Each structure stands twice: as structure tokens, then as C-alpha cells.
Length: 310
Ligand code: NAD
Image (cartoon, rainbow, N blue to C red; front, side, top):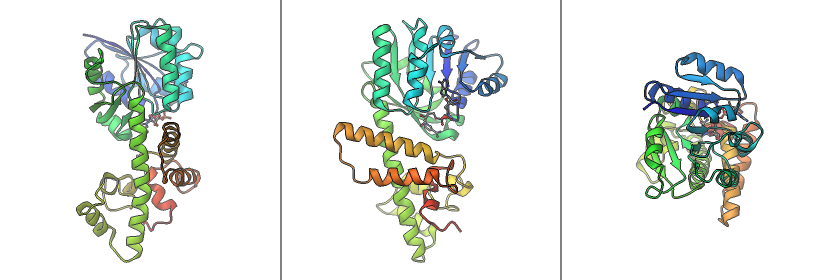
């Protein structure tokens, strides 16, 4: 059956997620899109003029859609898009399915969810942040960490079908905001590994080891992990790693800083001890402000820490 889906936030990730919807939804379906940057709306409409329709506000998107997805930078943007003037909540979303895929703080998500369910008790609202990067968004291979339990959500089947058009994995994480908690925990771990991997590679290389041998050692030993494999911070080991391509097309260092900061807030709130977090946050904050590193893949932390890239 043809569907009417709304998509708000057409940035690095959202642009491709919306394109995949337009390509894979049943015939005669429409994707109603909005971004505060008008050129992004124009660009995406030009790619699929028959199925992507530009809208004038989040309310306009919500008026025309049964399912509404948001993919925005931070909690304040999600609040503005939902609760602000001409926001999603200015529309009658009583029976609609709402999904926020942004990586934000759990408190902002729960505040918006609270507002939505008070005003529209029959609306369904889920957190479903994603992992897999811009390349994954373009290829349709991202993973969704869904804030609900597999067995008690009336919407799970519909959500799975929708996510299968944009990605290839869905992990139900238990309940509202736990998709975000899972995503922040994941990015905390991968961010800290990025720093540890950079330091470990550097000490090995400066001791005379070939970086390719070091990567083989980790893969065969107890240090085996994805960052040292597919995303090794040292250029020239894995041709597809961002480091081997000038640290382009990866997960940007300022996003890693944001996610570690959100993870630390969450850890503090729930009373979890972490000794590495403050060093991690400081390192990514400084790297994201460093002229040689800003706007590049977060594994550029190897360069920031003085690693030898030749
Ligand atoms: P981005 O900054 O490229 O895109 C965000 C878009 O939201 C922009 O186009 C911006 O104009 C738009 N926007 C901001 N405020 C708006 C408003 N009030 N109304 C409408 N549009 C508005 O960010 P991104 O890289 O696409 O990431 C989006 C989210 O997904 C972030 O929370 C990020 O942490 C997370 N994420 C990113 C990646 C990645 O590799 N880039 C991977 C996984 C998750």
C-alpha cells in the first residue's frame, strides 16, 4: 500500500535515509521533507521529483504524513521541531507514528515524548538512533537501536518494515529512551577505543614495528576490535578506512565529542563511574578545535596525539 512518510532534517545522514525511502517505499508513496536549509530541500526534491515533496515547516510535514521521522543534530533541535512554533505538535498527530533517529540526550527525548503523549495519547513516539555512518546511510546498511521491547510494542512490525528500507539491523533495546542510552554507551566505547588504539599503534610504531604487523597482532590477540580493523586510525593499513582517505567520510570528530559529552551526562545521572570519560572528552574537544583535525573523521585523534602518518 502507498504510504505518506515525513522526513525532517536532511543533513549528512537524513538526506540519504530519505532518498532510500523514496526509492524503496511501495509505488505511489510520498516522502514529505523539511529542513531549515532550503537548498537541501531543493536538492533532494530534484533527485526524485515524482515522490519527494518539499514542505514549508514541520507542521506542514506532519499534516501530510502518517509516519514522521526526525534526524536532527541535538536535543534543542528536536524540541524546536516538535514543540516550537509550526512544530509537529501544532498538527493533529493523534493517530500517527513518530520516530526520532537523532542522537540526543535522553532527557530531551523524554521531555518531548511526555509532551506528545499528554496532548495526543494515541500517538506512538519512539527513539531509534542509528549507527553505520554516512556511507551506511547512503548504502542502506545502518543499524537502528529502537527504544521499545520486541514483544510489547504494537508498532514493531511496521517499524521493522520501515527501517528495512534504510538499514539492515534493528535492535529493540527495551523501552523509551533506551535506544538512545544504547547508542551513547556504544559511542562512548568506540570513542575511547579510538584513543587507546591511536596510543597503542603509536608506541608500537615508534618502537620499530610495522603498523600492518601491529594490526595483525591485535586481530590475532586479545585486543581484537572493529576500530583496529575496519577503522584503524593509522593511514595505509585498511584501504577503506577513513584514515587511508585523508580522514574523510567518517564519523566527524565534533560528533564524537558531542556523543561522549552526552554519555558522560548520562553516566553521572545514573551514578556510573567512568575514569576514562573526562580524558576522552578533553581529547576530542581539543581535536575538534585543532585546524589539522576539525571536520575530519574522529580517528584523526591519531594525528592530534602526534602519530606518524607516513
Ligand atoms: P547534520 O548536521 O549533517 O544534519 C542535521 C540537519 O538538521 C541539517 O541539515 C540541519 O539544517 C537540520 N536542522 C537543524 N535544525 C532544524 C530545524 N529546526 N528544522 C529542520 N531542520 C533542522 O547531522 P547528521 O550527521 O545528519 O546527524 C544527525 C544526527 O544523527 C546527529 O544527532 C548525529 O549525532 C547522528 N548520527 C550521525 C552519524 C554520522 O556519521 N554523521 C552517524 C550516526 C548518527
